[in-house]
Length: 266
Length: 136
Image (cartoon, rainbow over all chains, first blue to last red; front, side, top):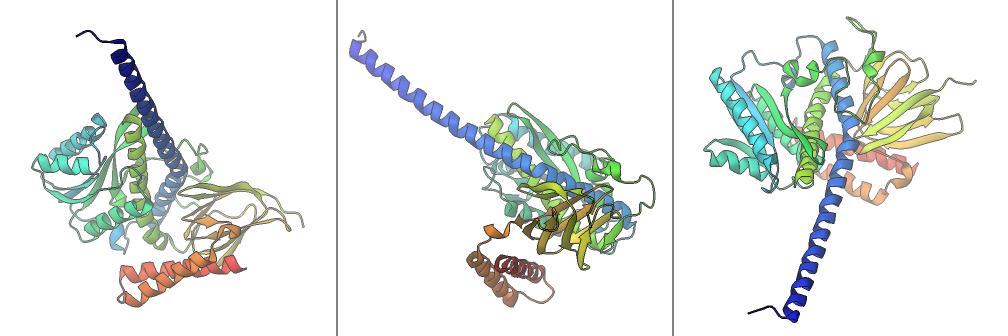
């Protein structure tokens, strides 16, 4: 039956309604992205500075720390892998890139005779790992839309306990680093032990992603042994609090980078 | 006496709260109160909750209720990294008293030498200090 004028009018108005809804959804998505972007940009200078201070204090503290969180285990038998992605599954390669990178890293470790323990932040990486028949040590879910500092603290406490109790001897984290709404990059970082941490390899240059803080503060530090820095209290005592803060803030940054990436893609 | 000014930046996880030239920074480290003037020797310090005072001049002082953090003094500038920093006018004494009570309850329940006790003690000290700043 040919469409009557009335049918056509109804159809036009229905399409217009869909357009309105789509536009509203786009606006919500854009607002979420903007908020996520603002949060990560506010955090980056702080996180970079915490990491720089950790490096400086670690270099000053010497090799024989007393605190368990600062001690490198004699042997790396088990590597903890924290995969950070999203709770939802509609974000293209956002989730699968992380799972793929984590699983590849685990195979590499296992081929060198080490065991691995998976931790997941986000429902998607948790269910992907389970689906692949891989054992999940612990998962943290329900906040990937808007992670709070308390979420990062909970993850950090759990992972630091696993490290101190020698369930894991190293801790690597995988997340999508946010560059722009269309561009994310999978980042891998070693957080513990501090002696192997990525933060120690970052050299005297500022991290490339700390756009909010362009000055190189390390330039002001004398190079080489024995810079005349006063430590209050001594470096190891500072590290006792600084290292947990550095683990928390690094995880928080990963959660926020990941959230901004997810909103950009999603 | 006129002092030389130097740059001070105060950062929190939520962003920058202060970035300006000052004559004197007054805060508290784990060791005790500390005042930083221009050309101070390099320092890396752990900060305890206190009233942070940034003296732009003798008469113009910017105050913050400052939580735990760190301070790095390099050749010509000072950076403070703190978990929280609030202007006294933004503090809500009622809310702070609630938090203090909660920390005190936690402290009663927590066992000796547990992480829970340490966290509660830290919280208690922070909210006590913030209340003092709020009522000053």
